[in-house]
Length: 476
Image 1 (cartoon, helix red, strand yellow):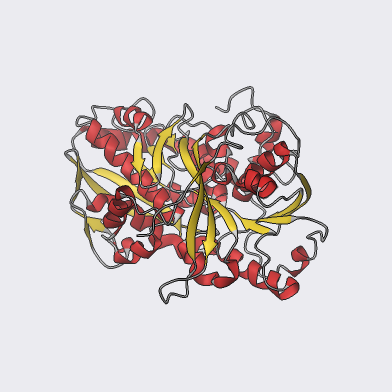
Image 2 (spheres, helix red, strand yellow; image 1 turned 45 degrees about the vertical axis):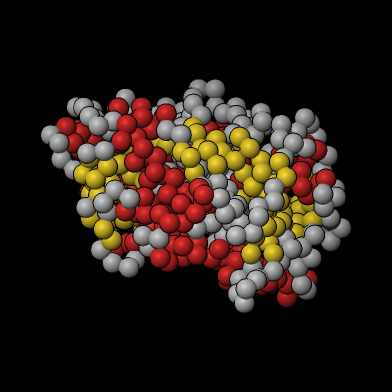
């Protein structure tokens, strides 16, 4: 159940796309609840008999984030390759066999192919759990999907759910399903340090924001707004083109002229289109007056957009120029699929790697899963709650809502080097130990991120403001 103290605004924000979304989700969850008593015990009994653990992996193969499908699956399977997994083909979605972790054989029973919508994300999760009988589900990718799958996990208490990279705040702060774990930040957390940089380094005092009109960008923009406004900045407009927009001209026209800067939370293939059309209207990017969220430093998008982004600042869960032993080892692991190596600094790859790595550590810690191996009250879920990942870009642990606490990075996009046409990354600052409350700004009783929330209010800023750690990684 949702906590009784939850703010009504948060409940409404989980509507997932209006009345049609509400009706779909309510009906789907009701059907799932009705079938849970037959599906989950079967999975539990099978596992208790000592059979292979059945794992499903869900990502987006369609829509704005379809280009990351193989990267997501590959991030998870690269971990499994460290435990005997043998790829069945050059693409991760071709499958993998031979996985055995902590004495537990692992079978990947299927892959979910979603499209960033709650409806498709939920239907693919249900297929993997109820038809393919996955006992552990890794995924999904996108924000609305994450909320829907987190809600669905409550109807499947005998299944363990590990988020892929979906970053809407509500999936863990509101839903708080006891068998749903998220080892990646939410969208607000990924922007920790960016409002401070805009105000105190770029000297912005007024800003506008633009982002896709769904839950992840609401969360992403919320992090920037909360921090920027707490320090003293003002937001003059929040603009929300629908996800999948191809003509941004009417939305670009809404951007005020008398602002110091623009924060962009358009994602996936939409970012490529938006920045191209923005430049057609406004000329070359003035990178002191525009910045972006976690999508901007992604290797796939850097390659697609190219040099117009050089000089821009963004925030991200990775530090692409970190050449420490930890990042080198991470890249070596990803080499199970050579196509992953150039995308090692992608949060999409990292998110699914983190989910699979957490599962592997938990399984190694529980050589005997007992008669109740998965889901609420299981030994596996208890072990997952205690997992601490020593990730390539810092430690990742979980809070009481099974939500990641991590280190964030403020980065700048740099000119291509070494004959490449793809821009590079220079890490500027580390923001350590970012948690989901954002230093007290967000809780189950505050309004959920939305088109208008959080309000732009000057107040005590998050604790890292003014205390970020300056970074300079030596060149490899």
